[in-house]
Length: 293
Image 1 (cartoon, helix red, strand yellow):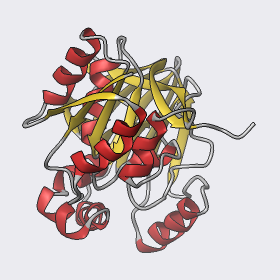
Image 2: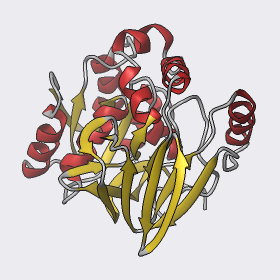
Image 3: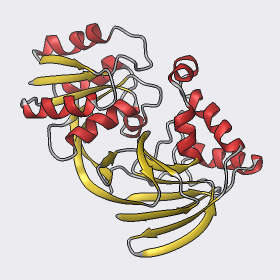
């Protein structure tokens, strides 16, 4: 088997990446190599190049942004992805039950330890996303979580930046169409989620959000007062839908806002609202721990 591992050297974990990977791959006779990313877009190009060169498996070492780039490069065809958690959030890996340790995650490529699970991907124009598309204060929160904050505080960087974003978040009017049905509401943020994980510890949007169900979950955050935030956090910790959110599900989504808001797709600039979003069911394969029979 031939494996190409795409590594983001700016990811948040200080560890001997090559040594750990060699200890996992070499005894199994795996022919492996690496590509190093240096700037935005390098992961997309490296994934496409590895697919064109006929690699059997493409590893993604880094955080959620690194994973998103590899997914984007393979969303229109390519081999399965080996997620190697190395960043701050590692939301998709957590959602799929992939071990957080590099050695344990790499071991999924060896023998019969792993199996391929098909995972949906969202699309908005030319932008792909595997976690979520965001507007409003959540987009501000992701943008505000600097690399320095992530290096110092880990996943708490998102919590800190979230509190800063909420403190002066303006209310917007959201007009949303989900598979032809229209709704309108006031809120602080809207997101179109493929994954349940919010990137903060093990908190989930809701227990029934599934990356393989062929649907996207549309969420509007409507409250940010202290009682609502405390109650909403308690709901999320129990895997329940937060009481400060309204939610709809569908395959084709249109979002308009007054005033217009910035849009991020897995943390990357995706323009301004209005925005149209669709789901591509089972677009990529991801190696996950084999389920017990």
